[in-house]
Amino acid sequence: MTPLSTLSPTVTLVGAGPGDPELLTLKAVKAIQQATVLLVDDLVNVAVLEHASPSARIVHVGKRGGCKSTPQAFIEKLMVMAALEGENVVRLKGGDPFIFGRGGEEVESLQAAGIQVKVVNGITAGLAAVTSLNVPLTHRDHAHGVVFVTGHAKPGDDGTDWPALAASAHQAKLTLVIYMGVSGVEQIADGLLAGLPAHTPVAIVQHASLPQQREAFCTLAELARTVREQGMGSPAVMVVGDVTAGVAQLSRHATDTPPAEDRATRFAA
Ligand code: SAH
Image 1 (cartoon, rainbow, N blue to C red):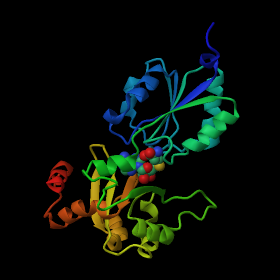
Image 2 (image 1 turned 45 degrees about the vertical axis):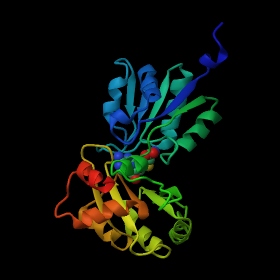
Image 3 (image 1 turned 45 degrees about the horizontal axis):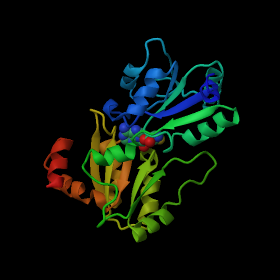
Image 4 (image 1 turned 30 degrees about the vertical axis):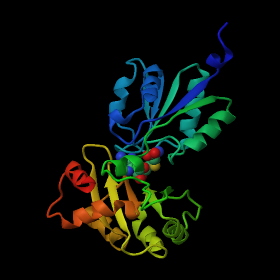
């Protein structure tokens, strides 16, 4: 007799990584190959869909590319219905399913509907962004820890207390990786300046791990101006802390922008 677990309706949340399709895990590839229905988020690089079966149903639920974002409740309903129909449902999410992107909410609502949930990790954008610069998120001399923090709170939520976070980061030597922050950069930078020195180095990385990746380096005092002047738009992460000091200094001395690989090599030297 088939074990009960294989008969249970299941949805797998799969982290598609930051963009570069080669950063998918083997587990993610396997899940994509076996899916009969794939619900694909905004920031997922469609190149990862080459692993999908030609007969799989692919539903894009993102708001980029001119389409309106599919409401979250509808996506959750769609997953429940497909799972109950016996489909092998994969929900492809950018980066890691459990770093922002509402993965936790999806697990709760699927479980409430009696659906079994599996989660496959992906490489989160903030990690890929700094790694592309050969910058570590932690370092025994510069950062004892790292905080992944959102710059965009849920409507009605006060959001992050930036001065308090900055004071803790300063005192405890923490690297701050700010997601969804470029559109509200003025307010974030002002708040952080209440607790961190104005000369704290910052790296801004847009489209991390993709061929169109761009970076900008500055101090916290220059952050808002740099984001606006360099036209750094979403998707981008801002990495605040001494771990980025090397790259920031190099960029100051550069006469023009060298390729990321060159800059990373010089930083490492
Ligand atoms: N779950 C995702 C994050 C989703 S929130 C993860 O783990 O990466 C969406 C935010 O992630 C974007 O606004 C941006 O801040 C960041 N992001 C996603 N992909 C990115 C990329 N390729 N480069 C830089 N930032 C990215």
